[in-house]
Amino acid sequence: MLSIVAVDPVLAQDSVVCDAEGLPDMISGFFQITTALGIMGLVVVWQADSLVEMFTMNIEQKKSLKQHKRTALKSAVILVILGPLYTVAGAAMGLPLAECVNLVPW
Image (cartoon, rainbow, N blue to C red; front, side, top):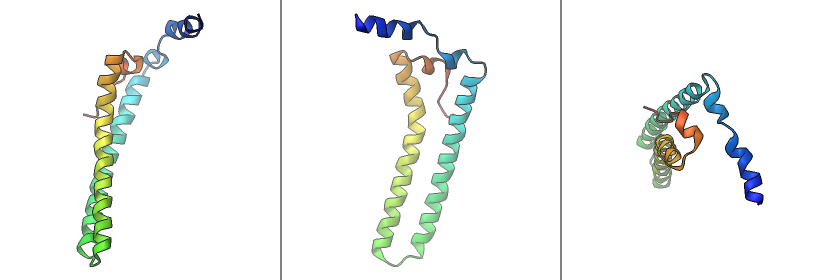
């Protein structure tokens, strides 16, 4: 009984994000800009770490720089995969936001 009372009002509501004019496009554009900035950040971090690594003689510092480069690469991969994954999984689960907002960055 509690689940019927608690769930019915939520099911009756339409998606506010999908009904708002221009908001789905704004969210998609924000995600594309964020992804592009994340990839550019990866390139800058990768190049800076490679440059510093060339002038570093200490083996521990080189290991630390390589670890930093791997961490930056993992973050960029997660950033690029997250949008399409939400779009596909959200559509499969019937989430209303996945139906009207395109989070694929390309």
